[in-house]
Structures are given as C-alpha cells and as structure tokens.
Amino acid sequence: MKNKIIANAKINLILKVLNKRTDGYHNIFSLMHKIHFGDILKIKNIIEGPVIIECNYDIPQEENIVYKAAMALKEYTNCPCGALIKIQKRIPLGAGLGGGSSDAATILEELNNFWHLRLTKSELRNIAVELGSDVPFFLSSRPKWVYGRGEYCKELDCIRMVNGALEQTGFRGRVLVIYPKIHIDTGLAYQSLDRKIIDVKVDNSTYNTLISDYECELEGCSQYAFLKNNMLNDFEEVIFNSYPEVKEIYDYLANLSGGMARLTGSGSSVFAVFKYISQEQIDAIKQKYKDEGKDYLVFASNFVL
Image 1: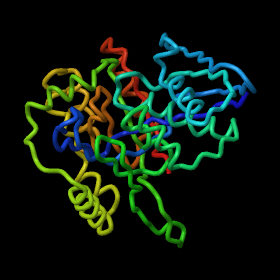
Image 2: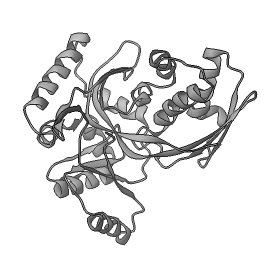
Image 3: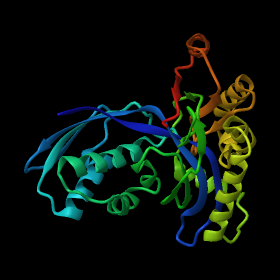
Image 4: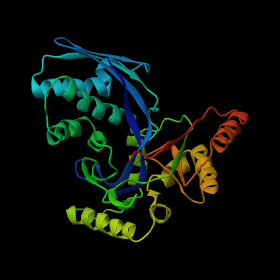
C-alpha cells in the first residue's frame, strides 16, 4: 500500500463570476493556487477486482467522488484492476478549499501509474472535467488561471529570479485559513449571486485580456503588492450578508493582515496572506476562538511551489 499521498487544498486568490450561461452554469475567471494542507490517501492495488473506498467521513461509496474517479478511469480504459483506497479527510466539505476535486484528480493520476495505463495529461483532463468543473485544475501543482465554468486552465506565467537564475515559480508567504464549520452550498451561493450579475458577453478574448493584463501587472511589481491590489472574490457580498459569522472572521483577518484577507470559493473558509506569521501568533488566534467557545478549524500553510 502506497503511504501518504497528499491531495492538496486550494485557495482562490481571484474569483470573478462573469455571467450565467444558457446551460445553467456560470462563466468564471479565477486565479487558483494549491496550499500545503490536504487529505491523505493510501492505495493498495488489486490486480483484478473492485474499487473499495474506506473514508473517515460517512459518505456512501457510490457518491464518493474518489470512487467515481476510479470507476471513470476503469471505464475509459477497460482496465480490470481494482484498488483499496483509504481516505483520511482533513479538508472540510463545503469549505471552498476544493477537497473533493483534489481527491478525484489525485486518484486519477495515482491510479494511472498504479495500473500502468499511460494516459496522457490530456486524456486525464478529459476524464477529470466530467467529474467536476475544477477537477482539471488539480492535475498539476502549478498556480493557474481557471476559466469557463472552471474546466479550462492556463498556468500562471510567473517567472522570477531565484538564486541567480530565472525560475517559474508561484506565490510565496504564509496562508492562514479559518473555517467556521459552516457548510455553504455552492449551488445556492450561485443562485444568490445571480440577482447581482449583470449579463455581459464572454468569449475567449475576455479571458485572454484578463490574463494578459494581470500578468503584465505582475511583471512590474512584487508578488505581495500584486495580491494586495488584486485579490477579490465576487461571492463575498452575498455570503457575508447571509452569514455574518463569516464576515466577522473576514474583518478580523483583514485587520490582522493589513487587508490581505479573502473568502475562498463560495466559502465558508476565509484566508489571509502574510509575509510571515509566527506559530505563537497562530496559537493565539486558536486560543482566541477557543475562549469564545467557537470550534473553528484554524491552520497555517505555505503555497505549493
């Protein structure tokens, strides 16, 4: 059994909801980045047999996206192999951190290797997009621009001088995340947002212009300044109005980080980016909420580079 495969969480540094499509989905534009916090997966290969899921969350196997991903891979390749997959969920459900999608993408990549299927990234992406809009994002560790309904990705062009050499990198710093254990239904969040969306035409040129403008700005300033100027999330107004407790967390983190806080996804997790935050500060935040009788999940992580 392969030990401790980490399926990393993500945060949305930028999230714009551009319009509602005729198929009922929404066109979005987002800058997504993985962080070093995630679910733990273990896999035991079964030469011929079923896919079996063991999970510390009470999710029926047929409804578990990891099971759906494994079965989709078997169907795509006519592979007779099976697997025992143990999932230790650490990323909360309905938190805006992408836990299920990350698990699904990780299993596609790992079983592709375990079962010696040799599928290309393009083939894996074709399977991934049928599992969920943002599953393709998790097929690599690079930060990406994510657009369409979430199925299209372009790696962030972020070239920096590192140790005297030009290197493709991601953002640096510490990310503090607070999850108030409020489950927010993404579909309902979009419904609330629909009342505020101004219908505009969206096509490939829309995304190309956004990417070009943002990357041009990033070339001319520090990563920290870029984030301070550009981090946003279109869900914040409707979520904060519906969930004042989430707004309180946002206000607290925004004050603590000098305005570097945002909601991730449709919530309910809120994050803040720091150049540096000590373990003593993190412990003090945990103690603050404990003293207030609030059973929040509070953790700090680095960006995945």
